[in-house]
Length: 394
Ligand SMILES: *Cc1c(COP(=O)(O)O)cnc(C)c1O
Image 1 (cartoon, rainbow, N blue to C red):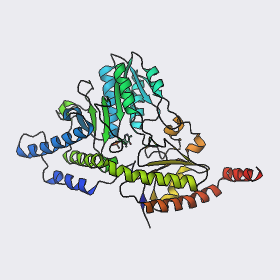
Image 2 (image 1 turned 90 degrees about the vertical axis):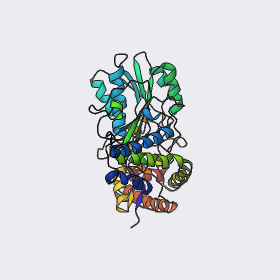
Image 3 (image 1 turned 90 degrees about the horizontal axis):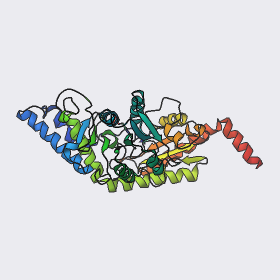
Image 4 (image 1 turned 45 degrees about the vertical axis):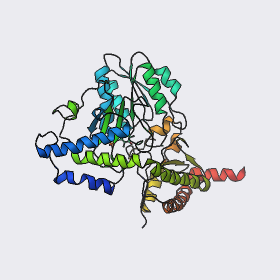
């Protein structure tokens, strides 16, 4: 059976070149970078050059990067670390209704400690309202956190404008750029970003490694206490092979981004066009243009996303209904709710995220299966029958 993986926003496989660069650091160059002997120095050299490479890609200094266990930890650290460091200045944080759960849950946790959180609305395309942002900033506001590109619907936010507003108003700006690396042109200095979260495994790097950029001069509380690793900010023996892997994966993603994105956009737009032309009662979620190159997200009226996912899975096609982190719960996606999609339609949301190995033939197969499955599922839906019946009388 043909197998088509269209869930690259959930995770990707490690790129073979990346794996090859990481491999020596497991068993050959295994030293602890904190050790002073040659074994340690060799490992330290690899960490330093990886940090330099990632810093260069982001436009920051190497000593502004702190390695973490992934995007979730980076988000938690940014939100909680800034709150702890600045809560005497103010207890107000502004974020959005469409953040990743790592940001939303961190904010909810701080609410218990006395933080006041404003959750900004988005329009029907999932874009934040800059006027509402401006109007929400008070003299108690310490941090604004807005995701660079949404992981469910792919909408890209006006990050540079948000950075400018925050700078003008003297408020710190954090962005979760986990989905954006390689897809969106990011320069933390140009865009006035104070903190930025990263993860390797969404761009063909290993799972379990990420980073938080903290601009020099920003006070952020240390996250894990212990040894002196990461300049005393995040203790724990340095994960050398994964750091090497993250740098290699980011370099490949960013340096080849133009070519990668051109190919992804062609696949993305072809699938959007074929669904809109061939499948009635289907609605594209997210922004048509300000959109991640690899993201397609549709609602298919009269269908349950979970049922469609399972049927596609039996045909070898991997997609996501809502986001992988919320699947398993029957709650409609918080992102689609914020965009004003009614719950009965939101529950049919299906996300297709492309990757480097996908082809136009994959799209032929996916569209063929989609049409078949939707016909089967809709034939079982009393609402669909009713609608069709009504239509006959019009
Ligand atoms: C995947 C993801 C995360 C979490 O990153 P992990 O490395 O899996 O912890 C955070 N934010 C966004 C937008 C993501 O897509």
